[in-house]
Image (cartoon, rainbow, N blue to C red; front, top):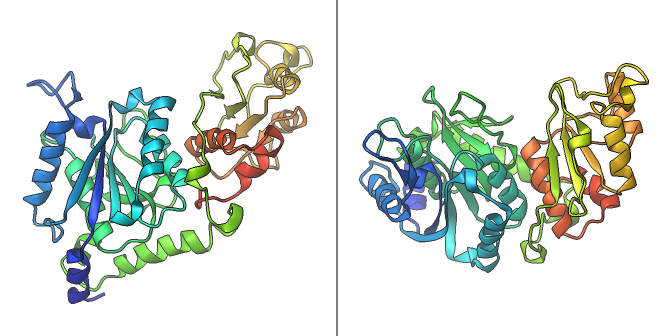
Length: 372
């Protein structure tokens, strides 16, 4: 790709849709930077001002700005997700060259996974951008995350759902939205299994022929060609046939002392997702008596089976390395392996609104919709 071609792509007509949902990237604090809360209008003005005043070759890009939500991302709920999805169902994607969604960091991986599935048939790139600090604070990464997202859209990156995020070490990464893992404790960084470092991409924007640009497009093309070879109908998920999401999936994480008798299985629960320790294990009990106790997963699996509630255990390969894993699966647990826990959760949510009965949930989870 030569300098003239890049400049032509940068200046080509087409708006970018900027969707504001809240989060730290749309928040401001007091004089000490604390007690942050959302200020959408101020954030919109500042985000675009910083970008327009930058030396980006896309600084004159036109935007259409829409506020869809006004929430800190820790307050994201199923009804708010439904509101976001309703917007996309009405959206005329042909009017835009790409979409950038400003979103908070706390639930970023969940929303990115949701949109990677729900927008898997959309033919323009969709980026989620966040900031670990308010935009007007020194060291905030939101402005760079936004700039790089816009530049990748202008450079012609393939359709898909992406997250661009600069970690604390200064390295900026491009993530497949469906592969993003939530930021860990005591960290503001994000990771995914096949993230692409964008350290060389700025050279592309300056007009150099770059292997990085070729790699980016090759990477997204491989996602379409190789990783979505088994997707349903070969076309991902049809957004128009999705109903309203419901809060009908229960997630459980193992810990020492987890008492399964304290878990109430009400009629609203359609499925259970049970996380596992790193060895793909959970407490089963070493003796016959222990296996009947409130700390054993086995009686809980029996209760779920009687209530016709599938229990998905993840990450768990089909071949269990420990006896406890074998017992879990013999008791009816459904093993799922290879996806993030965020993706397993939202895909299980979507299975309900797409009309998959419980007996077909397992096969749907193992289908490849968006390279997840």
